[in-house]
Image (tube, rainbow, N blue to C red; front, top):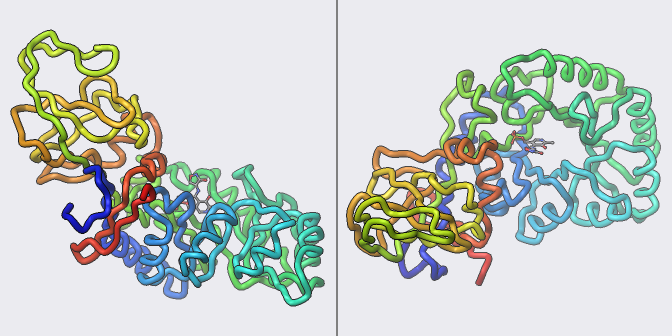
Length: 385
Ligand code: PMH
């Protein structure tokens, strides 16, 4: 980083928009040509930064954005995103007029919700809605065809709503066993067939589904994890139709380097004791940044080599065992590449016994996001100052 970067602790996330655009271009090519892509940017774009990812995805050809709740959608509007935005989760019927005011599409699945929302919409407003079908995810959505028909009829007879889409979400599309996926797909097709008139958008695919299964019966996908260059699951890696490119990397700089004699403690609890004379480096990242205590023992890259975190991870700092003395300010990469060595998001997920989705979400906005395009810094998002 240089003097242009508006943050004062040498710890940063790099978001490589060139990789994001590459990932999107690949899926566009892979899908049928008229397919619309909703880039899923909920949860601050899985920790990558919703407005920056949203803008780049739209530039790369995405049709619209999808978020989890209304606040996330309004936040994007306030930052100047004018594209279609779909809220995937539940909203309050009493907030229908706010969604309409911002031209945001909501997910609906209860007739009672529509009845209540109707009274909160004024005469000039028309709320865009996508009806969610629960075909086996068991989260939100209408389960019975009879209920779907009632919703369709209500939408048909009301001037306050525009029936924009019908969708479902798969629970197991990232598993090689396709049985449950096929059951859900069958149920969704039955629900689509039961409609008198099809809305403009019929969609069911997340990344796993978009990457694996033919989407020509549908006309939109909701693409999240693949856009960030991560595989939807470990087992899906063997069936990916093209390589994915990781967008997110995490770096810091060494603030202190010391030669420690044998038998000395390092960090809280002194649970790590030097075995011999060791070079110990201090990193400017800790559990308050999302680099949680369970990552004790995880390796980081220094001068292109793997070195371990030793001792307990503190709130804002942690220590590593260096191979030899290095200068203060030497870069340490916690996620990403240095030379030929690579610490992937999946490696961190494995260490934390979780999925890759969780890792960038976990890295706090306390760490600034630095956006790179065409190899240059185009923006720095520091939420602190
Ligand atoms: N559509 C819906 C309704 C979702 O909830 C998600 C992700 C996506 C699309 C995008 O999925 P992808 O990132 O696999 O492409 N939702 C979640 C979730 O609730 N927990 O993990 C991922």
